[in-house]
Length: 508
Ligand code: NAD
Image: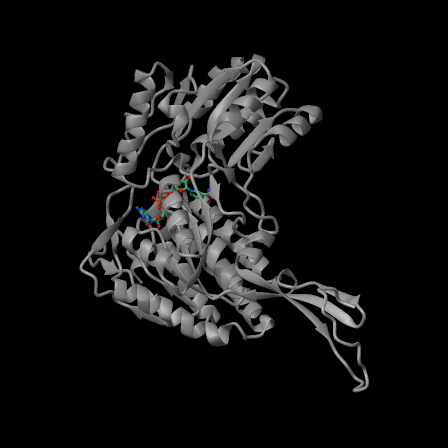
């Protein structure tokens, strides 16, 4: 497939749609290049599917649902077992493509796939995850039990920054619960996602159970408004996520929208200094800051202020290069547009009076002069009214704020509208316990910089980072992708039973 293009190859392949088990060449006139962000090499062209193609994908899902919903749970689970084995087998090959289209290092691309693979592993326990409850004898001879039934055709819309992990948050759990699915990958880097979809088909996902359409706003809006789509999982920016949540909600769908972030790491002076500084730099600049759980704000408390020069030195030592090159710490940003936006925000920080401790704007990478690189950038003297604090930068920019006490730090984090992730660095159990209790953020790390929960828990961003009650993966997503039916039943084995007419609501 197109994803296996090598640098010398000239033919640029077209990414296919997957409709009803067929790999379909889109009839659209609108295409977009998938570009290697380190070289600008065009890797493939991705179609923006037509309205008819989106309808066809949903119709295929609707047809397949009739039989898939009744396919035994063990049969569904065995497909997932096969899928996890295939992903494991092909992980290195996918990581190379992922790194080429997204920019992250090969090791980080493998991590992207691995964190998604963990979700696939978890789907293999669907037998117990999807179990209902049973209460015997709730009234004389009456039992009550619940069924967790699939809801129909569901759709997923994914961002560019995790082209493996986030699609794998969505379609495996949706389909193992008995739903069918229409996936709309990021148009910026769909190639590794498509390799995972190919593996799902190879694992035995039947025709129509998993469909893929590509595109932008029009395709997304079509999914959000189509009467046969029952649920939408969205991950991406706050602006688009809010739009999707509102539009799909107005059309009666279940929606979960995981959105933007501004993650604060609070550093107390009693923390393990070396470990903490390593964590700040890794989580601040890894993946070029393009993680929704990246540390983008460091809050130095009291004497931890004195650690700033060391933080700067560590950040300055990171190696900026193409993700495919050995030893790279920081790869390119996804697009020229993303780079322009990050540079604009750095400019705004300077203009608004923050101190630019480390300037990554002029970084040059020999052999990759066309790459969308920005080097690690560090600001101190930042205040909460500056754009570099109020906006999600989504680049390798760490802003440092200083406060005197843990209470002030907690109040600062809680005033920020986002609630995706936060971390506390300390050796004090009492401080950690206070922090986890009082902090109003969905995912908390204690001496852990990127506290993305493992899949038997759920991803639990909150406040401005999330709309909808239930998060992706884990038990919450089983609830999201199923509806509960409660059955109250009574059986008679004797014709002579006569309780008389009951005109009350009570069970007897
Ligand atoms: P994005 O919002 O630009 O795109 C996400 C998806 O929406 C893509 O599939 C895209 O095609 C589609 N889209 C783009 N514009 C649209 C529009 N106007 N109408 C309808 N659909 C549209 O996000 P991105 O730049 O791909 O990803 C980065 C963002 O995602 C960051 O804000 C990051 O914090 C967030 N993110 C959040 C989480 C989380 O779990 N909270 C995880 C990963 C990424």
